Length: 154
Image (cartoon, rainbow, N blue to C red; front, side, top):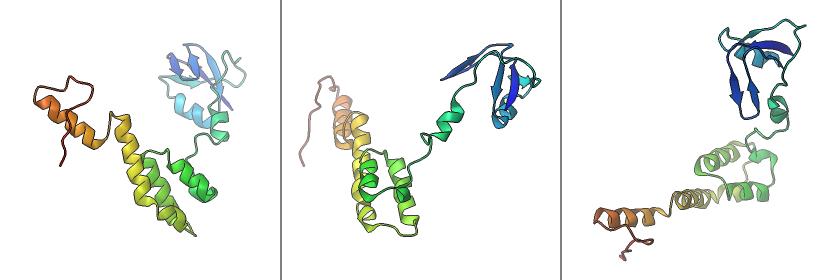
C-alpha cells in the first residue's frame, strides 16, 4: 500500500478527499492518482487522515465481473439472458458459442433472446418500435397529444 497527499479536491461515489488529505491506496491506484496535479506521493510515515474508498473489496467480491455463461448452468444462463440488454445478450451468447462445449439448448434460443432484449429496450424507451412509429406519425400530423396514438391496421 502506498500513501498519497491530495493536491486537488477529488470525490467519487464512495469517497471524498480534500486538499491536504493523506490517503492509503494500493500501488496501482497510487500510480494513477499521484500525477503531480491531483495528488503526489506521500512518505510512508505520513499519518493517514482519511480512509480510502472500498474499491478493492468491491473488485474482490466479483460484483464487477461480467456474467460468465460457461460457469453457470443452462437455466441460470437463460434466466440471466431474460433480463439482459441486447449488447450484454450478444456478449453472453458469443461467449457461449466460443466455449469448448457450447450448449445447443442456449444457442438455439439466440434469435428469440435477442428479439426479447430489443422488445424490452423498446418498452423502456416508451413502447414498441411499431408504437413509436405510430406516435411519430400522429405527432407529424399535428396530433400526438393523446395518451394513445391513432393506430393503423394493414
